[in-house]
Length: 443
Image 1 (cartoon, rainbow, N blue to C red):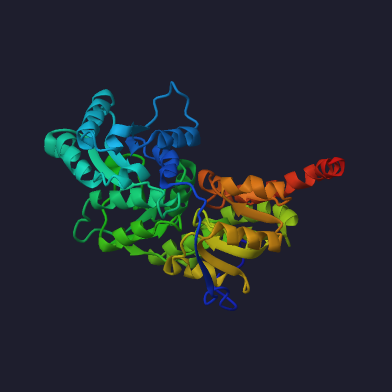
Image 2 (tube, rainbow, N blue to C red; image 1 turned 45 degrees about the vertical axis):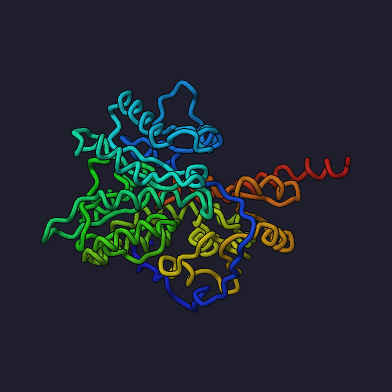
């Protein structure tokens, strides 16, 4: 493969570029944006996420993170009691006391996020004003070292990955101003696992692109400058507000496929190479080893997945890029690809590569979507945790969509791991099928 020309992704017809989109509004089954704290607190090593919410919020984060009770995590919950919700106490005074105690105990915290929840939003607690007040007290203006920011992790009218988008968008105003005449720089936008980010940085270094930063960085003090000479690549398709905030600062987005699989990763890296004037021969030489390793690893898994049908229920906003990867590189046949929100500008290249005839849906009406899944009977349904077990009971194989966000899945070296996440449920169903048949017979 290294000796051949790189494929041009956008070939043939329009795919689903102009396909009609079924827009649905009804009952939703998704996690809330608080879930993003689970991976954000691991990425941002000097940050603390303080959820202002209920005991239910605390249980959700504790359970999702799997943190043991004696650990010292970098997240917590300022629990709103009944008297707070009833307006019998000054919630701002209570919050100030909680933050003061937290920062006195944890002086290592450099940025504190006040994270809104459904309860705090219902009682109209203004966390943006609270963050400004506490930042003036604990930040540089007050002689301290902790910046205080806020964002909403509420599950009202959102899906769970939007918590990361809101968090990163809150960081953009804190990024330094780019110096006049600064050299062009590249910004990777999205909370990638450290191992994946390091892999991308090594490839960019091989390409001669040395001014590379990430949002978020692992430490708050390392936030890079941003301005008209900043070029950024979105690593995740759900970062619409963050992209808009960066563009408002003058940064320019590099349009590309998202880095899932061989094709997506190649196009994503190629977009940066073109923007920074890297010649084609150098680019091919830099990406050839990773492409070849990934292609060989995917070939074996393709034998298991080729020709299998699948449907995506809307959950993570990763659905369209993943459907492109599964159809083009593994031979799967997407019947329906549903997504909570379809950002046409960011997904235009992805849509062009989806097979014509794929049903697209935006938003959620659970009952209608489940009816279509039952009628389609796909070999694999990608959905949220709350829907997976009922569908399994009906004899349908499922994949938890949230696992695709928690796992390292970007880049060449993770392409086979990503594919295996879809192969395992089918393998499990195949291994269990004799036992399941015996159970039905006994019943």
